[in-house]
Every structure is written in C-alpha cells, then in structure tokens.
Amino acid sequence: MGERECHVYEAKLAEQAERYDEMVEAMKKVASMDVELTVEERNLLSVAYKNVIGARRASWRIISSIEQREENKGRDECKGGEERLKMIREYRQMIEKELMDICSDILDKLERHLLPSAVSGESKVFYNKMKGDYHRYLAEFATGNNRKEAAENSLVAYKSATDIASTDLPPTHPIRLGLALNFSVFYYEILNSPDRACRLAKAAFDDAIAELDTLSEDCYKDSTLIMQLLRDNLTLWTSDMQGEEPLFSGLAADELTQSSPVTLLQNILHWIYTMF
Image 1: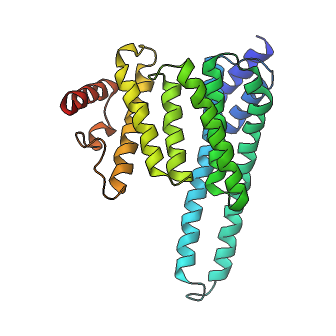
Image 2 (image 1 turned 120 degrees about the vertical axis):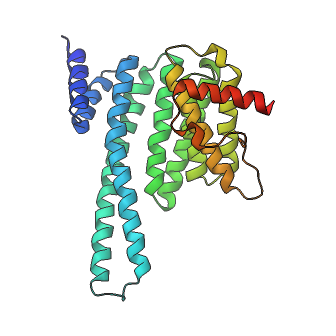
C-alpha cells in the first residue's frame, strides 16, 4: 500500500471511529500532494472538515445565545452578572479562534494545493464551493472589516463556482445543486438579501425540474434530497417576506421533510402538473 493509499485508509478508519480531527490530519496529507483528488478522496476531505467545523459552529451558536440571554438580564440584576458575562465572552472567543484556525487551514489547502491541481470542471466547482463555504463560516462570527472581507471572498468564490458549473455540470448534478443551495443561504444569511436568495434557489430548482429525465441513477438520491432542501428553504424564506405569496403554495413544507427520494420525485411531478 502506497503512502497516499495509507493516508486515505487512515482517514476512513478515523471516520468510522468518529475521530474527525485525525481524519482531517490524514486528508491534509493527501491534499498536500499536489494531485487531483479522486471523488472518494474529495468527499473524505469534505466530510472531515465539515464535522470539525460543524461541531464548533453549533457550539458558537449555543454560547452566543447564552451570552445574549445574560446581557438581556441586565448586569446589575443579580450578583455575579459581570463575571458570568466575562466568562461567556472569553469562552465564545476561544471557539471563534478554533473556527478561524480550521477555516484558515482548509482555505490554505484550497489555494495552494487543491485548486491549482484541479483538472476537471467538477473538481473546480467542488473546491470553489468549499472556498465559498469556509469564507462564509468566517463571516458568520466576524465583525467589521473582517466580516466584510470574508463576505466578499465568499461571494467571489461562489460566483466562480457558479460560472464553471453552468457550463460544465448539468442542472441536476448534486454538486451544482449543492452550490446553489449554499450560495442562496449566503445571500439570505450573510448579505441579508432574501430576494436574491429566493431567485437563485428557485432558478436552480426549476432548471433541475426541467431536466429530471437526465438525472442519472448514481446521482438520483443526492440530487433529489438537495432539491428538497432548496424547496424547503424557499417555503421558509417566502413565508417570511411580507406581501408575497409563497413560491410553492401548492405543496406543504412538511410534506417533503421526511420523504424518500421516490416520494420526493412524485411530489415534484404532482407540483408540475397542478401548477401548469
């Protein structure tokens, strides 16, 4: 077994053991070899970083919520309020440092190794999407100029990925759909632009609907599940926009929440027939 194969197998073992920090370390070694990763290697890298960043993003949200509740109590309401707030803020800042380190780590690998080594359009979309994602994660907790810079970097990366995806990947491809999903979330949550978020998500959904007959068996499950997420986001976002009817009023959001891919496709077809 060669060095590359050993690192990949180590990453698989770490994934099974749910030791994601070690999974990251194994895949970083593969990413630094300046070769185009296989689909399996790409996915292992993505899963590893997604787990280490996901746990800390969840922690940050919880601590930020606690901090807000403590601030709302008023500092003089009870003894020890100032001390608690100080502890909470220090704990939040520690988590933010970890988030920043993880994001900087993968962004460095993307810039120096993965993107320069990418050959296929699929790989280029995948890595630019990752770049947009991790700059977005930085923008979630950054403030001032740091937040502005992270948001701008995320926007540039997502646009680059979208340009390549529009020519190299079909509308039903799961990577193209996942890009549209995350890009629309970026518009909604980071740029506070629900109109653009809804337009992007709806266009991706409609384009995929128009080419359902080209959906390959290999991509069927992933693609239909992402289409479900796009539709659920549209339902949520449009219901929050005053003065506008939901874009998908013919189908309740809960109807797709626990659907299997087969049921999802049936629901999509039903929606097409009833709306047109």
